[in-house]
Image (cartoon, rainbow, N blue to C red; front, side, top):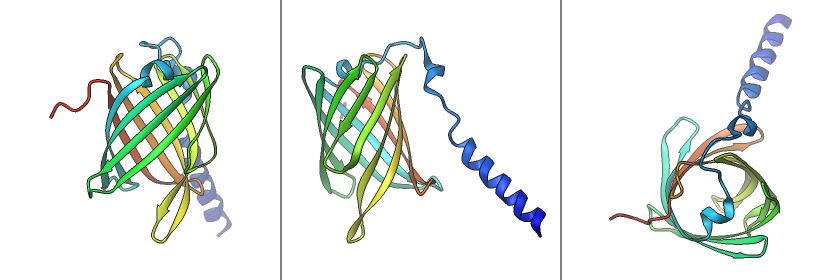
Length: 180
C-alpha cells in the first residue's frame, strides 16, 4: 500500500511540475520586440474564448480596448461584449518599472499583476476576482502574449485555482479592428 501512495505522489508531483516548464528567457532575441506601451497605445481589438479544462468552449467574447499613456503609465480601458449579450468593463493601470518589467492593477484584480517582456513575448501573472454564482471566486491567470507582427498578437492564459487548471483563455488581438 505504501508503494502505491509513493507512486501516486511522484506522478502527481510530475504532472504539476510539468505544467510550469515554459521560461520567458527562451524568447530572447525573437522579433518583433514586444513593447507593451507601443502595442496598446490607441485602439486595439480582441476576440477570444474561455475553455474549460476539458477543452469545451464555455464563453466567447469581443474586447474593444483604448490605451492611453501618461509618462511611465498606460491605462487600458477594456470593454467586453460576451456572446450572451453581457457587457463588462475592466480598466487596467499598468506602470513600467524598467524597460521590460511592469506591474498593474484593475478593479477586479487582487493585489498587483506582474509582468515582463523578453523578445516578442510578454508574460503576465495575476489573481482575478471573478463573478461566480451569487458571489466571486479568486482565480490565478498565467498569461502569455506572443506578438506576431506590429498589428497582431496571440494571447493564451491558463486559469488555475488552488494550483489546479480550471480552464484556458485564448485571445487574438489586432490593431485594425473587426473586418465584418
